[in-house]
Length: 528
Image 1: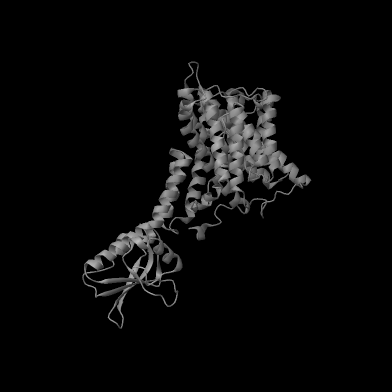
Image 2: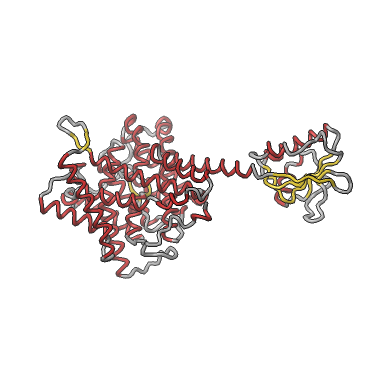
């Protein structure tokens, strides 16, 4: 599938290309593009941060502070310029149980420990293993998150009545909301046909906001979600007992949060790499994410990771420098400190419209074109990861997707083992093996031989085959036992160097003769 769809995630319509550049020089056009994109991202971060804070059952400012800290730290020190981090829903849903059962102070302690684990992950240089995620899993990840982004916006269509109960909007408020959303999306799609001087998402937000303010249209605004007014985040040491009992409580959550955060971050990094035809630095990004979470925990914030929605806003605006993320973080802080009253007047519909467009652009519509053109198991992986992402969480989806892909790979390779049989001039039976002998193929491997019916000397020809693991050695050893019980000799021939090394290390387990190989000269007649 990789060969057929290696370019599937790259968008040829994006106004940039070429290798990743972190040159300190910035021209005026790049400065303008990155600053305006950063402002747009900051505006889109506000309702998301508030919503995820409410999901985690913490004060909205706890989410806003996390968005500011994570965005700024990863923009400055991260391994992927252009990627945006902040408070995320995937981590918020993990935090709920900890906050409900033990309180927000335990959350702050868990976030610090999460950061420590992520730093260790980066120091061990394990981020590179994200490159092993199969392409079908990447497609499922992208499509699943696109659906999640869309579904997350539907919560804004709910309102509370006098009793505090939530219900769906109806009548005029619903029609006004839908009209403003459509207007926002039209501006985003149509403005680039006229000019790319200003990010269309920013223009759409400003235009819709001004229309609502000056016409007096009554609609749901950011301020209706929660107040974003606050001060600069202050140092806060989690008020928890510093003992083993506390560690037992927070450590499991920290492991899950670290795993979820790193998976979403590194997959987002991979996605941006594909889109920009460049290469990020995953280990550096792990370190930056960890540092951001440690700082978040000590400043009374909920931590976070990369945000694919806001990252797509930034990347689609052409912002590829660290300046965009730095601008977004600083703008978000300025909203909290100085301009909360203005930001709270922005209609939620404008931000929903932006995120709907993000969802549409994030979804890989080319996925439908591969149906019938790629193996069925690849289609199954794509669909499975998409659905698991939507109905459970990203970490579970990716892990299961990789496991499914690995099992399918093993199954397909297990079926490829075969043998050709002949008798040589000395009356010896030659089994010319082809394929790979490993845990998934040992059963079929053993079924290829007939010890009771074979002559006294039997040779297994490994010129076109490989022995890969301990299960294969056990299978060969078991086969040797059968031939010995029948009073016959089993020999191995034409082993490749790596296979020979594997067998040589386990020679104490084997009861076979390695015949001298005139071509490879790796066999040893002394081994038995």
